[in-house]
Amino acid sequence: MNMSMLCDFYELTMGNGYFNSGYKDRMTYFDLFFRQVPDGGGFAIAAGLEQVIEYIQELSFSEDDIRYLRSRGMFTEGFLDYLRNFKFTGDIWAVPEGTPVFPREPLLVVRAPAIQAQLLETFLLLTVNHQSLIATKANRIVRAADGRAVLEFGSRRAQGADGAILGARAAYIGGCAGTACTISDRLYGVRAAGTMAHAWVQMFDSQYEAFKAYCEIYPDNAVLLVDTYNTLKSGVPDAIRAFNDVLKPRGITKCGIRLDSGDMAYLTRRCRKMLDDAGWTECTITVSNSLDEHIIQDLLQQGACIDAFGVGERLITARSEPVFGGVYKLAAVENGQGEIIPKIKISENNAKITNPHFKKIYRFFGNDTGKAIADYMCVYDETVDDTKNLEIFDPDATWKRKEVYDFTAKELLVPVFKNGELVYNQPTLNEIRAYCAEQVDTLWDEVKRFDNPHTYYVDLSQKLWDIKYNLLRQKH
Image (cartoon, rainbow, N blue to C red; front, side):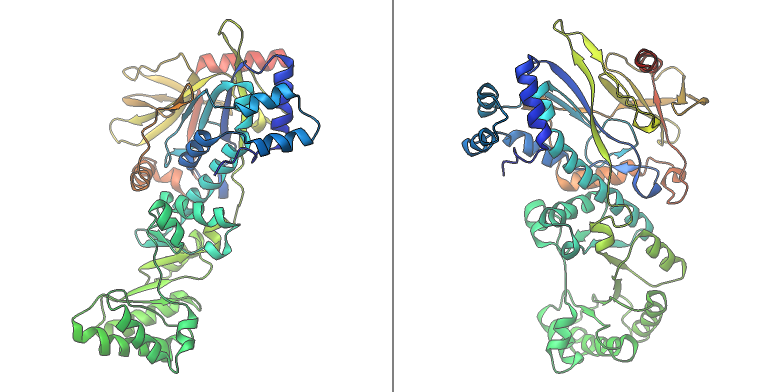
């Protein structure tokens, strides 16, 4: 779907202004970055690049769009003609989806004529903000589950259809094993799964009949919801009876039960004993009902016997902190001679002061451990010699210095568009998910803590720091 008009109105008024002020062809550099990790975490997960690519490839303005804009009485005919023939011709670099990322480093860099770059702002932000938020939350929940499967169950509580569909995609990138959202399976290959609701049990004259019928229809996927009436007195006993009557004669030992209410730590321990005593040691226990990383962590610490988690509203809405906070800021422009002129935004709030210039990012990995040591932002024409030791410092506390040695430097931003043409070889969703797990594993456990994580170093090169400092002095 062409989302050309999904933009803030000021992008159009500024575009009209650029056109009529002689700036329409001026090359600009914009950074998309975020300022703070949600939930006080140590890192975030980048996601949404695939949808950004689709948007840019389809971006155009129809005659209906032009008529609407003309009706506003604010735009010149020259600008409307420009939009009528619009095509993105710029360059884009981005960190691959699934990459762990940190505040204030660009997740995406746009180099394009001013109007083009400005018109991308809203869609790029809403896409990267939403999917990065959900991928980050999902990764926290998956890590809390400590190897147990996590399924995304949140469609009915998502904020709109895209929130459900793309949220399931982002949750899969973050590590979820699947989703309850069928269309996400059809569109993106996020494995959809599901068994029954309480209505199935209530539909039959007895709970046992409901369980027996389900086992007969789905003998290879018999997962029974056991808490419609009384989990321990009737739910689990009726499930065991149905397993014995239907599955056992067929030699099937793979089955499961699900709980959606009650004291999960206590109930799952009791359920596990009842199932084991009845000989159903391979029967899995799945729990759902308003779970998040903290509840899951507590349940496991309390000895809950759980094989899988279904996580809904607190995942699909990132309920604990539902805004990612990414921003899109001008970092540089080119003059008529092709020289890149750095630009900076200044604020009394230090966190809102931007890092100027056209930049690239290196991630340093220790050769002895394979773990990520620090990220290093530098000017586009700088290179890092990873055969030599390097001293880096925390830009927020210049007295905190760290010597980096015996490391390998890897550039994070990769080319996506060149002169408006896609040059990026897009990975499959399964490849993105595997890459995410691999890259998260390169982070130290101290960075992955849920509470008070270690602050990961994101340093500026000396050249970039000097440019920023000089701009700050000039503007003051």
